[in-house]
Length: 186
Length: 186
Length: 186
Image (cartoon, rainbow over all chains, first blue to last red; front, side, top):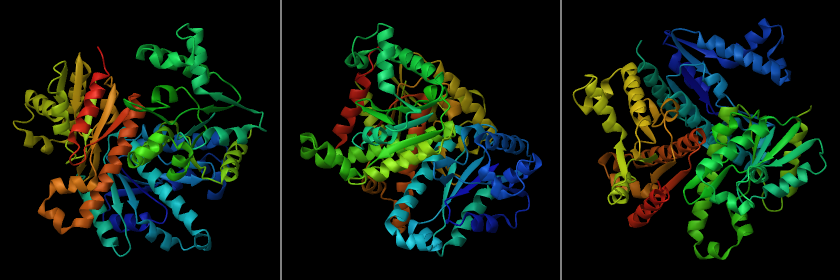
């Protein structure tokens, strides 16, 4: 299993979509989608929006079920998830050890992009008004993502690849991910 | 349990004191005080200063006892401790996994401040004389604190909140911690 | 056991050689050498170059055997290894938790040097041609090393010491490591 994560705005979905589209031997699994599916099965939610409103206890139950499901998947799997999730309570790790310990991870990928490129892609009004603060928060998120990534690597033993998806360099980013996928022969 | 840590000089005590003073449902426990209490009970020391002189074996015994005590505390607890401790042997983690694994952590908070603000608050003679070196060491300490914080988060699954206590912005820092405390309803 | 790691080009071998040469009570063990020895014993390779070509399964078997051997070593041991290893698949952790959990680590040392000093020492043609990219990659490697170091510390409870081996300051770097070695009395 390869886990692909990204800083929001770094273009993870585009890079992952391009790199995996002609590689049908890989199954791309989106962590969020899997959570919604399992929560629906358990009759805990009827839509994705309700996930956030679940109690912490129920969220943990679903996460444990997701981990169990992922641990049983065979074949070549790309797990598409967050490195960390920025919430009012702080950054939640996308791969807490309780989940990570269940998985056999072969590689950890973080799709990143230069801070200015990400800010340009977001171009929200809020970003323009409170520019310096938004810039600082994004820089902090990138630092926390890298530090969590290192911890995931130490815990799992899997290597970490940081792919820079700078403006105008999508092809280079896609090539790096393709090369990684290609390095895992059956 | 919420764990509040801080880079020395960042003003953790002030922020924590202000945020918790009117919130009597939270018990603030200082890790260092707890160590002294337990070491005294065990007749290993008669004062705080003697803690540092204990053998590593005795320190580990006390730390284990502190962990056991903390793991049994009920109710809403704020643990006030160091993110890392700078010693001649290097930075010791304030929450080594041997301790962290015993606790049920709901949030990890690091009180930080801009490097120049911290240096200004310290204003020791040494800092003035060896300015560049002191600045570099502090920057290193802040980086190590953030990286350890990320590891604590991955191991515990708890989110990390970095609160910036810049000069003249104490009220903002206090509000952020108050908001976090308020988000944990019984 | 003390573990000494270094960013390539930071001068770990020189600092370690100088600091340990008159301290015969310390046994310096090179992780890579130990891997080769064990792989040869197991008839898996006949030379160091063949190590890289081994299957992942065989590499894991050897790493486990190295861990077992290290965990049984008595006396004062300095383990000389990589903090992380830069490969086309990404940065592999030098001390994955599967290895780290077997060791009783008393201190973690990272020998670092200013980015420009390391680049100057490498002075390869490639570095001159693609200067900006090489600089960025090295900065990334240094950040990942520090973040992994912090994770090693949190998992093992051992302190981390970052020794700066800047140009012209080898004596200061050696003194710091000597002081650390001297602080561990039998």
